[in-house]
Structure formats: structure tokens, C-alpha cells
Image 1 (cartoon, rainbow, N blue to C red):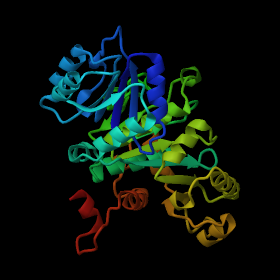
Image 2: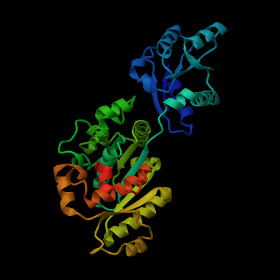
Image 3: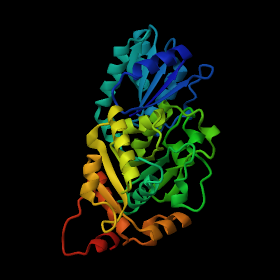
Image 4: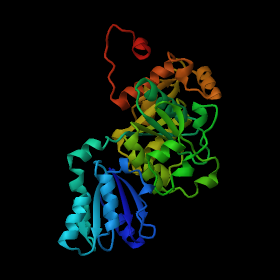
Length: 388
């Protein structure tokens, strides 16, 4: 759920934030403070807010009038109002205005969390809360393995052939170039322009993201390292929390060096794709990467291995590679240097150049797994199913 808290003081805001951090749910939080006791409700998107938490020293009639205006005809947001001692008449007026839960201050943690869970269980909240999307993280075990190419083109296939809404996030904060795999012109905004801002929501993401097609959006990496200096792990966590509420898939392109930002993405991932190539240096690098992911606590069942640029006729046999790295290869991507180079050089997804290319077929195998899409066998040719 999306939960917004507007507090009267910085101390109260910090107390609310501390309480909400203990709730074990994938909720999005926005914490704001009153401006000269004015709620300034225009700072948030009420339609997408599930719960609005407000506090005041005493029940404020101006607050009640405002609450009444936006709760009269809309199910969201449900309002939790916190205030000091009040009369029975004041409490009745608060309920009549649209306040769903009233909590006396000073607040007790259990009172606030219980109020949130009661609202969460209400039927209308469940109906308006969209199931969260899946987070797919891609990381190369060694430079040049092809993770960015695979991630960006996978997103294009999901958005076009599965008609799913996809957001790709380029977390290569120093040398990110995912945009050039999908377009010949970079967008106007980057990840750094929005991720640290107060009040981040899906509207802000949509404004900053580069639109690739009707369902595919990209948050570019910063243009220079200085712009990324203020980005913290909690910013990435908040970004992912917001994104999975509006996008069916969030694809994160990670750098080789696993820092606190990358760890946050790995923790939130439904699948982690480790990309390698069929040469001995990559096999050694994969073994180290796999060991590192295990030490960091990444669950083995969500890690998938992609062997990129594989040519069975000339490369090390697949069985030998699996024996060497002691891991089952989940997917192989064929080696078609000419087509891939053309795709990258002109900034177009490979399916727009040659939708019947074997690499497209390999990528569709991954799509089937992550989207739980089943291709039924029939007399209809495979490509006719996809392209009509």
C-alpha cells in the first residue's frame, strides 16, 4: 500500500517513521511535515494513496473540513487522525468528516500498526491495491558478458509481446549506457534527478523515465559520477517499492561491483540473472560471483545462470561448463555477433531488426519463465502465434 504521513513536528514525523519501519510489508511510505500547520495536501497524489496519517495537538476543524472534501466520494485514502485529549462531540465530528481511525497521542506503536492492519483488511483497500510487479536483476560476472543487452531486450519483448508494463532501471551509476541499447537519443532526465527527492511517486517516475514504447520505460543512469553521490540504499529501496505497484516488471541492470545499492536490488529481486560467456576467464569469474551471492544471503532458488554468446559447435561443451562451475545453466543465448552489433550500434532492440532471430527465441524462453506464460503446443507455427 501507499502510506503518507503528514506530521505537525519533525519529532512526531521521526516517531511515525520509526513505528512504520517495523511493519513487514512491501508498503511505500512518504513522510511530510506541515507548513505552518497547513497540511498542504496538494503535495501528494490522493487518488493513489491508500492511507493518510495526520496528527495535531488537538482536533483541528480546518483539517476536518479538508478531510471531508476528499473522502466524501472516494474510497482512498483512508484517514488515520492522531490528536490529544478530545470531547465525545469532537470525536464524533472527526468520524463524520471521514476519519476512519482515531488515535490518542502520545501514540503507542501497537495502536498505529493495528489501525493500519485494520484498514489493510478492508475489502475496498484490497480491491484498489494492485498486486506488486516482479523485480528482475541482471548482473555480469565479468565485464562485457552482455547483461545490459539481455536485460534491455528482454524488457522490450515483455512489453510488446506480453503487453506488460515494464520499467528498466540502470544502476550503473558510473558508466551506465542502457539507453543506447534501446534508442539513438538519450532522455532528458536520469535516475539521480528523482530518486532522492521528497514525495517520490509513480507520477514522478513516469515524468523522468524515457519511454521506449507504449509499455516500456527506462530510468537512465546519471550522466556523471558526481550526480550519483547522494543516492543511498534506502532511496533504491523506496524506488523499487513504488515501481512494483505500477509496473508488471521492474528490470534492474546492476554493476559488477556489488555495493549497498546493488544489494538492495538483490534483496528485493524475484529473480537474479548472472550472465557469463563460454570461456575459462568467465567460468572463473562466475564461480567467484556465485560464491559471493551465496555469502551475501541471496536465495539459490531465485538465481538463474545465463550463458551468453554460446556456439555449441565451437565452444566448450555445455556439460563441461556446468561441471566446471558446479551450476546448472538456466538459459543459453546464441552467438550472432553481426545482428547484435547492428542492434547496439543503431540503438534498436533486436526484435525490431529480426524478430525471428535465434537470440529472440532464446530471450522468449526467459520471458516464459518470468511471466509464467505457457505456450501451448498446437498446429499453429510458433512465430505465427507471436506475430499473428
